[in-house]
Image (tube, rainbow, N blue to C red; front, top):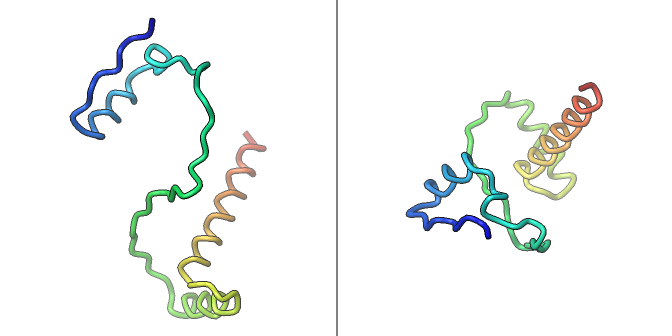
Length: 93
């Protein structure tokens, strides 16, 4: 029998708990089932980013050609570059 999971007063308390525990003592992962959450959106955080005006204008032109908001295009570019960097570092490790 697995150890009983305590009740938590807050999400923060639960995060702290799981960060310092081995979940296999509480859960039987062999009984787990894969689920898909198609409408789940990742958490987002607003940031302030200073860009040269010319770069921002070029980004807006490119976004306009693709008919997407410039902030969305910037996220696409960042995502693609991050993925490329991570693949490069994994091969080199």
